[in-house]
Length: 126
Image (cartoon, rainbow, N blue to C red; front, side):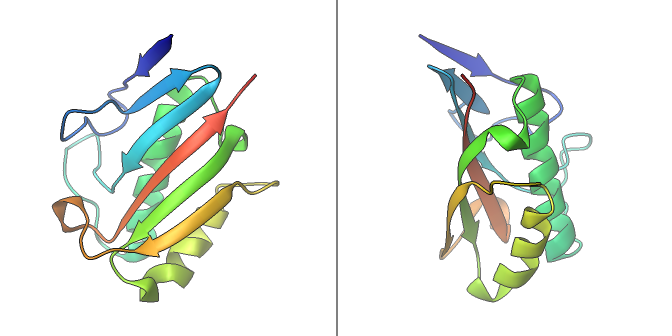
């Protein structure tokens, strides 16, 4: 059995997918970009602020599903340019207190809506 998670506190999906799905204690959270859910606008003022918006969107979906950052076991970070890695990594790391999740970071040719960073997560809660 699976449970679909959606919240108005994170951007609505821009395609045929759910914000997140829970199955057997795992939360699979779709990739988040820097769309501000309050106004639907992209928040691209700086790579740091763009990353903060992505992480706020992740937090909103986690909270709706009753999960927290400590439950995240795996993340994938997609970057438009690997030169952004250090700044994104600094912001990303500030959202975790201990026991960082497993992760990969890859540079890709393009991301939805022309953003610079997209992050997806998998979380687990028994």
